Length: 147
Figure 1 (spheres, rainbow, N blue to C red):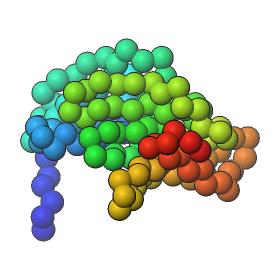
Figure 2: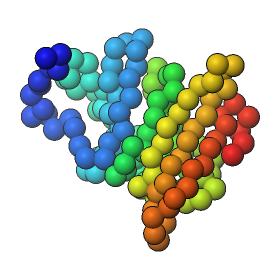
Figure 3: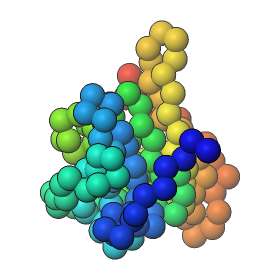
């Protein structure tokens, strides 16, 4: 068994949070969640090192795989499902993107990412809920800034 069991009595973990990894500092980044919509917690060896409030207007919370990490950038669909929030996992700079998602996906869409062999980067927004279940795939080309 390669899993490590840890004491989570510090209440670090929450429902609906986004999780990223800073490889350079071997640090886990935990953002948002049901009871901490605008907080960033950094953990090393499953112990919270720092907890801080994020200066953002949006909220970070989802009921699906609403986040993805591509290299050092953690991308999240903001709770309203209308745009992205991204965090540089190394500098901890957070940016509420002015990138609007063409079809509002609510807090139930899934987000995936990939980098092609030629270096182009893409985000895939799958499904969601906007007054009803969505059967959609929206592709954003990060390199060109085009949907």
